[in-house]
Length: 379
Image (cartoon, rainbow, N blue to C red):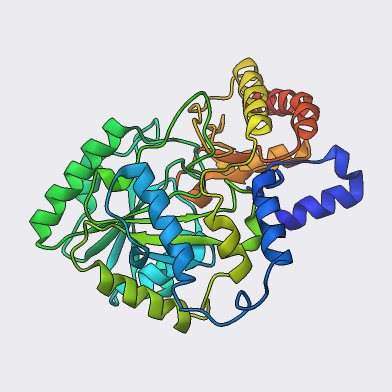
């Protein structure tokens, strides 16, 4: 899709192509982050470029733990936290630390496609657990997926690709089912909450703290979206203080951090984000883009589940073949991604993390696309 976008832009010009394929946040970081980064870079250079412990700067880990405690009231400490090269790095070191060959990881679908490869990287098998029609977690489907080989469950809220935010009630019911499953298989199953979009929500929606609902929770995040630092690859993994053998897990993941080649998250970025945990980008442009697209889709008859977070829409395709629909969209120079790539066919994903002008300019193209599809179906 990236290559097709470049081809179309070269042929017709950038303004004529409406590329919604990549979730690439374009909003600038908040001023508080920029000021802090500049302060560090212009300050004392005595130690900030030296080797550090493999889990990250101790003072940074303590600040992350303090923020987690502020959010959920649990007794976090710096020893529960590993600073990582983004959420991708965090997921890989967790999986490397816990998986034996043939172990299973349950993933709620539709899901971020790279979960499949992360799990396979470390000898595991992905088990697809479908969500309901409204993309809410299904506890009965979860129970059907759990076996003695299940080592972990990964959830992602706000979700990529749907923008769905799981409510506290939904999480409570889901984690009750996971507790039941853990008892049945005879060992605790980890719940990994992958939450880089946690602060990107709309209409007053607040994401619940998953670790408050389930004892064996591992929190994974990055600051790619909330601080607009996608290219800087900075995040963390935090192991719930309710996990009795958490220090063993932290030690294993810290060792994996080094041996997988991540070694440390970047020093300057660690120091900067440590003091910016309560900041976020201005999401007003995302919110306006979301409003414009939903209004247009309502007008032209595209069905979707209203996203409460992230910057994605995941509408149903008018025809069952989502790949064919995406190809039709390309004829109007609209670039989107088939839902089958995320484990849910009959849908497509678009990212509205784009300039508002692109969204406004695309609105007539969406209307032409639906006219084209409806015309084809009537012939």
